[in-house]
Image 1 (cartoon, each protein chain N blue to C red):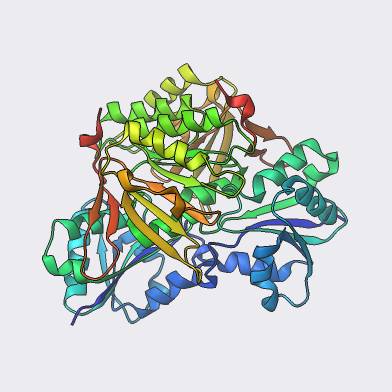
Image 2: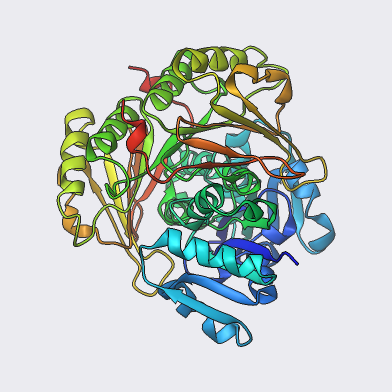
Length: 255
Length: 255
C-alpha cells in the first residue's frame, strides 16, 4: 500500500498565518519530518505523530527518509518554514524522487503552500512588492558566487525589487557586503533597503535604511533583505517605522 | 476617532488556503471594499458587513474610498485575491496615502498577507521555484511594453524562473506572443512552460508544455504562466500531469 506525502509550508511563524489546509495535513500525518526548529514550534499540538527531527543541511537525506516512510504506507508530512517551495524542502524531495526508486513516482505527493518570508516581510513594510520583483538566495552553497552576483546585477539593472534570502551566516560573512557593494554601483544611494529579521516571531526586528547606509551587521540567518528600486517610496508617519511601497506605474523606471 | 484599515490577501480561492488572520480581520470589519468577484466569494460568511463592490480597474478610487471610510472611524477591509501586495490593492492604497490627506498617515494600516497565485501554482506543479525566480506582470497598462520586454530578457538571461502575471486579456492580445517570441530567442526550445488557470478553483486548468510548443491561446485573465530555466526538470509519472521542479544547485546554469 502506498502512503501519502505532504510537503507543507508552515508560514513565517505566527500560527495565525498558517493555513487551515496546512493544519489539516499536519493532523492527518503519521510522521512529521523536518528541521528541528520548525518541528519544535508544533509539538504541543501534535501529540499522536512520530517526529523525525533533523539538523539544518542534509535536505536530500531528509527527503529520502520521508519518501521511504511514505512508500511503506504511512502518511508523512515534511515541514518547512514559510512556503515549502521557496528555498525549502519541496525541491529537495522532487530531486530525491527523480534520482530515486521508480516506485516513488507513483506516490501521492501534495505540496501545501505557505505564507513565504518575502510576503510576510513585505506586508510588515507596506507594499514594497508593488511592482515586478525577484527572489534570490545569497547562499553560495549550491551555486557559484559569480552566478549570484550576475543575478543580483541583472535584476537590479532591470529595475526589479530584490528579496534576498539567506543573506548571511557565520560560514558566509562576506557575501552580503559583496552584494551590497555591487548594488551601490548600480542603484542610487537613497534606494530604500529593509532588513527584516524573524518576522512575526517574538524576536522580530525591522530596520529601514537607504542603500548608502545599509549595514550588513543587521543581517543574520533569520533575516530577509529587501532592496527597492527607483520607484520605491518611503512614507514617513507619526510614531512608527516608515512605510515602503513600490509604485504600480513604472514608466519613470525605463532606462 | 481614527479607524483601522486592513489590506487583506484572500489567497487563490480555496477557503482552506485563507489564513485565520485574514478570516479574523474580515469578521472584525465594518466595511469590505474590493473587486466584486472577490467579495462575491465571501458574502455568505459575512452577513453584518457593508459591502462596497467595484469593477476591476479604478484601484486608486477604491483605495481613497477605503481610506475615507477608515478616517471616519470605521474598521475597513480592502480585499484582494492572492496576496495583497503582489499586483493587488496594497500598493494602490499606499500610493493614495502618499498623495492624499495628511491625516491618512496616522491611520492604523495592517497588511495581511495571503497565498499568492505564484505560490499556489508552484505547489500544484511540484517545486518549480526551487531556485531564484522573478515575478513580473505582462500588463503594459502601467509601464511601457519596452520595459516589460527588457525585464523578461534580463531575467531569462540571468537564469531566473519567470512567473508571469496578467499574461493576456481581450485588450492585451499580442503581449504574451511577443514575450514568448523573446523567450525563444534566449532559452532552449525544451524549457518547461506551465499555463495555470484559476488554480484551486472549480475551473482549474493546468498545461505543462515546452517553450517550443507554448501556445498563448492557453492563457486568459486568470492564468499565470510559469517559465522554467535550464535546471528546471520534468518528472513523468504514471497517470498524472508531470511534476516540475527546479534544481537547488545551479552550478550548471553559469553562462
